[in-house]
Amino acid sequence: MELPLSGKTAFITGASAGIGKAAAETLASEGANVAIVARRESKLRTVADRIESETAGTALVLPTDVSDEAAVRDAVERAVEAFGRLDVLVNNAGIATGGDVTVETMPAEQYRTVMGVNVDGMFFVTQAALPHLRETSGIAIFVASFAGQYPRPGAPIYAATKWWTRGFAHSLAGAVGTDEIGVTVINPSEVRTEFGKEYRDEVSEDRYEPNEVTEPETIADAIAFAARQEPPNVVAELDLYRRDKLSHF
Image 1: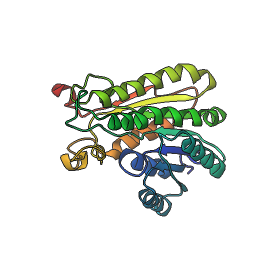
Image 2: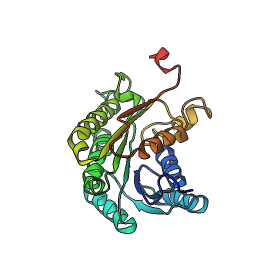
Image 3: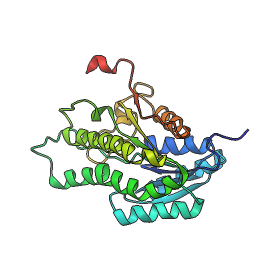
Image 4: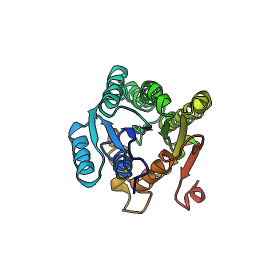
């Protein structure tokens, strides 16, 4: 039986851990070849080895800083050169601000780094991928956040980047839908990953026990569901919250 994503290529950012890693493994298990992108080459090679030993997919390791426009363009072109096409973009790379940093106390370096990855990175990757997605009637999947839907007083800069992600993605959908390019936004609430490692003392993997909050594999399943949609259909937006999430809001 042919796998649902056989013959397709996915380009996944932030793929060295967490949601990106789980997405790469899930899409490969459904038949896709995957170009995996992150800054940590050794972590990416571990992910690639697992994919190629446990699935029929091929993994291309592309160490890249998504805030570097030229590096992003090179990574996308290398992926298309290797696999001949691009069908699925998973725009997932993102970092958090420090847990105890306010707007008044945030260092300019931290602000620029977070904006560079969460905003500039999303834009650069999308810009480079769109011509190739147009050729395959492909889909761009954006990993946004619950924080991009409701005010987050404790993390206003991070939340603002996720509001930008949703606004950009939905506006992009209107711009490229006539080209048969699909756009999906996925909004998780808390996910047990190493998210926050850049500026926080404790990451969510340490804060939460297994299955206390959403696991990366659950978000990966949602990404795969979106990736399986064929034109003219698309999942416009998908929220994945704990069942009790809104009771704490």
